[in-house]
Length: 182
Image (cartoon, rainbow, N blue to C red; front, side):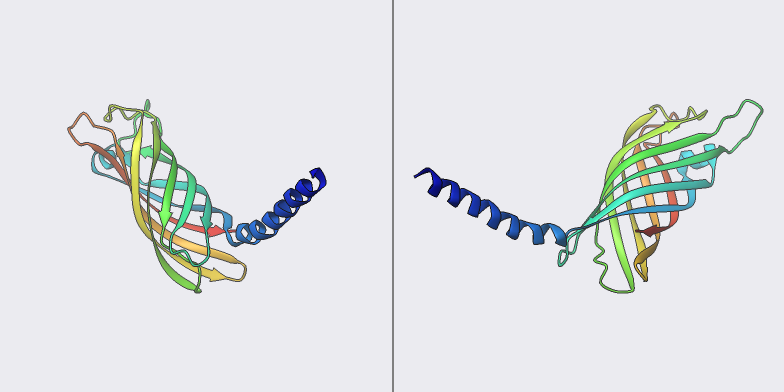
């Protein structure tokens, strides 16, 4: 009785591995990096000047599924809009989860992206009450498939829910990024 139970269990485990393995191979997970300009807006735009933004991400998608997912880390150091001897650089750092509409089926493909995350602000600007807060982002991008890599250009609006001392409720900025997916 025992050998028969062992045989059935072993056979079902082997068949599960055979069935599950192709399903896992269909998921695409790829790292990406991007660099570009970060343009501050609103009250934040009066405090800091344009600067650069860096992003590292994991892009995940399944075939024949119109939505993909990204997990990313972003850092944008900003220069003070009114530099003085005592001024310091400001920066915004974030960890973000997004949903994307891209499918990677053509050489050129427009996609949309929207997500939420946690943002940290540092530096000399004291216009905003909180140093860390939740935020959202929304944007569009264009994928350019060349060889084995996908290159992209992306524009997003990031809005962080942190009240300012001037009455505005959002810290906003827009990175324009150029990047590659490996």
